Image: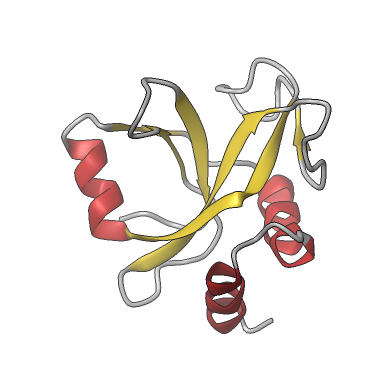
Length: 124
């Protein structure tokens, strides 16, 4: 069962490029909020910057791209891990998890549905 702070690698449907995903809510009625970590670029939103050492997958400056945050089914994520479409990784540190959660509400790029769901689940 996925828990808050768990991470996994998942690719985009159109490429083999895998990104680190972080589960930032506990499961609620079989769903969680997931954020996506991407390589930092000069126009990246830098609310949460991650560097090598923050997680074993991160090899260079990266950021959480809140525009790609989404509500995902726990069953779908676990199914993807079981069939090899996604790869489970070690949990993120608690300090990074807390910052990722706080900044989801600060980001102007968080989809409104994700923002409202997060607030309902987390009581914020």
